[in-house]
Amino acid sequence: MNRVVTSMTLTQGVAEHIRNLIHRGEVGPGDRLPAERELAEQLGVARISLREAIKILQDDGYVEVRRGAHGGTFVTELHRPVENWRARMREQSGEIDDIVDFRIALECHSARLAAQRRTRADLAALRSAIKNLDQVDGRAAFRLTDSQFHSGLARAARSIRLENAVHTARGELFSPHDLLPFVEPIEETRNDHQAIYDAVRDGDADTAETLMREHIERAREQLRVIVFGAQGTERRSRSNGRQRRG
Amino acid sequence: MNRVVTSMTLTQGVAEHIRNLIHRGEVGPGDRLPAERELAEQLGVARISLREAIKILQDDGYVEVRRGAHGGTFVTELHRPVENWRARMREQSGEIDDIVDFRIALECHSARLAAQRRTRADLAALRSAIKNLDQVDGRAAFRLTDSQFHSGLARAARSIRLENAVHTARGELFSPHDLLPFVEPIEETRNDHQAIYDAVRDGDADTAETLMREHIERAREQLRVIVFGAQGTERRSRSNGRQRRG
DNA sequence: CTTAAAAGGTCCTAGGTTCGGACCTCAAAC
DNA sequence: GTTTGAGGTCCGAACCTAGGACCTTTTAAG
Image (tube, rainbow over all chains, first blue to last red; front, side):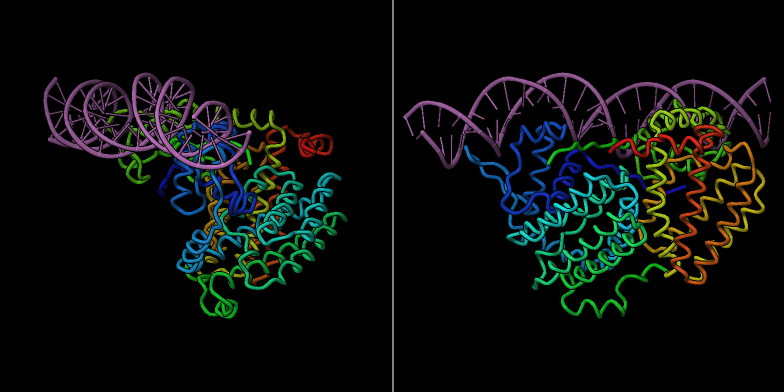
């Protein structure tokens, strides 16, 4: 019978929405957002609310705004946001595990449901996402296709709440792959996705779920490397936040 | 790059918070909420915001307000909210499945994590919740102890996001048991909870997860009976929303 | 019967948010 | 240097929120 209720302003909500799109890789470095008036209408908010949101993102280094005929709002290289994010994750060391645990809950069940409910169109979208993974030029684009696969799976699960929650949870992390100092994970990810796809296609819910769990656990390790450095994996067995609340 | 962002006012947020407490059974018919000034402070909002929220709940028939020395805000018998809820669920027939699918994702993984991470204190809390289930006098009180078990499990999972999401998702449904026209589910629930507890105590994550899935699937059937009537179970195989989006 | 106390009910000021719209300014392209 | 497609600025109205002062109702105690 206690606890506190908080409320976001529209401005904050819009900022978070756009930040999540960037985190998930839906829009990446160099991309231009739609013009303010246009985007405001798309989002269903007043222009001033959007402008305030952009201001926040600008201050945080996510976007930069250029005036003039070919101006607009452009996503930066994200160096500062990534550093801030890493610092925050290092400070609150349980945070990564909390988010990843949440993602596992959501995406494993999504995979299970997708295996039971997928349509031909769903499978086609997933195949396309896997295919794009091969032909990706840069790491930034990689992030988008990775996002496409997971989003497609969430969509195939046919659960609105689940899909939204997957997007929200994924938006809390930077997609890791273009941050890693090595490149094997790309091939690894492709294999994981292919295996999950096969299970979903065959309607094998248990396997799809298990593979997804393993896939995200690998992502957890990658995130640890990114945030804590190469020795992050070992540090885990010591006292990495996990047990901090008992 | 589209979609709409919405934002709740504080008032709406507070109303939803209290409504969720009622739905989850944390406060039930006849219970009195703390005095306005006191509750406002507990929630960290201005009194007027709380008052507006109470007004909403009053209009929806969740609470009634009495003035005077021994006055206050009292939870009603909830007849009207339950009817409204049933009507809404009947209209949007996919809604129940959507919520239940979401709950399965959250609570199954909670059960899994709980089996891996539970402390002695967690186990004690769960035992206590099961024990109270036996000694419950009325159906209303049953709802509370049911909520206690599931909350205790979410807490034992040691994931803040998971725990919050479990609460939110449970708050979207009325706990069914005091709505059912028959009483067997109470014993059934006790057995389910006991079995889940055993698995959690033994650290058997797979079993805990599976049992939880079955437990919530039973709840799904009960909800169908409540909303659609006794034939709801059969209707499911026809066209119960589930496939409406492909 | 009167009064004190505990509640909800009402009102006010001040400041923040959001909306929609009008109008200004910059910078690239022609 | 003009055009044009941006972003930048400003305004008034409506609503939300905070926090506090004060009023009214009801019950129980004296």
